[in-house]
Length: 466
Image 1: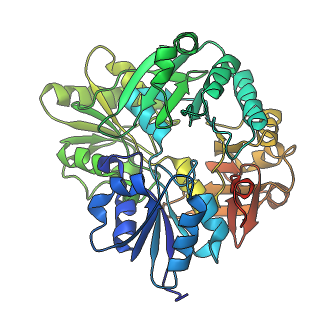
Image 2: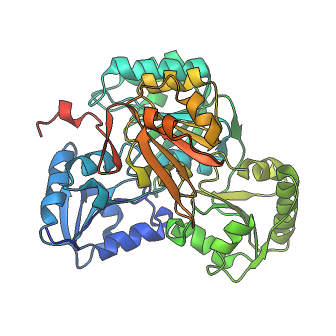
Image 3: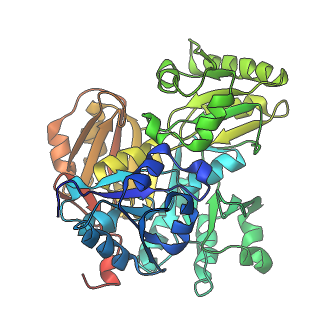
């Protein structure tokens, strides 16, 4: 294989061209070959002229990855994954079969559950779990254990693959385990046929016709502790814009267009500096405690909107995941419309840099919590991502985690001064890192470290021989 030929695993977002990142489009355009599932390739048809395209069918993931690896003998290859490659995507199998995982580039994308949350005005302030109800690759007993743990913690839960024609009982079982909650149903997120509505778990469990609306293209998000529920518009004068974790490549086309037409842009200095070349609009930062800063930003953005202008408030990562964007929605309620533009989440960027640590179920936590709860999540098979960790907290957070479990400790990923350590839980404790503002990632079950990357087996070895 020529050394210049590279495998890039590309997250194309949930479907709309507006929610692709600039880096994703560039990666596809730069590749000699593009490999992917047929319906996903159809979503990026505008990027494929002049490309050698290899299209696969449902259930042929191994064949697609093998084809991508074989084609490296002839040129560079983009292996397409919908949403984000680390969220039930192609990152794990791609790295597992790649000749050298350290040479594979993973381009993170906007994932469906955050895009759905932004469309509905939902923000996760404390925690959220992502769980797939498909037992094709994961035994139901393990899925049920994770559901029960999420129920015990009362955390919001995003259910992927909730129901299919041949698999319809798992959703009812999950609803029973998770108990009475408000439920957001989001179908075909980010596509022209998108449909989003609220119901509750009791009604969903009892109404056969309502459950018939749910299929494999649907996300079911159940509310829980720390969730914020506001209002969002498809277009508005006030915009909350997720610009990703850093670097212009993580910006979506929708975010770019919104910023280009905004006359005033509000946010932290580092975010304003990042988008400086995208928009001629006036850049405004505010000082003081977070509630005061967000109140000032909202007031000025609202006044601009009332004058018929467009204004944007920037958040790092995605507005729905542990950002202060909910404060804007809270103040806007009943007074002015707000549009929320999703972005690549910080956890996706960390996971992409680490390799494929989160291709199974995972939990996001906004800050360090009781170490016993973290070890219970890891033991149940969850990947666990904890934001805002201090170096001196690492030893206690990992004290009851399997010593051999792969972990990543990161700071400022995709920004200047990027730092990342990839070690086992035992070795990371021994390293005793110092500092603050770290993101700690405990990889999903069935993961290992190879050539400096974390690779998680999603269960394809139970379906295929390879």
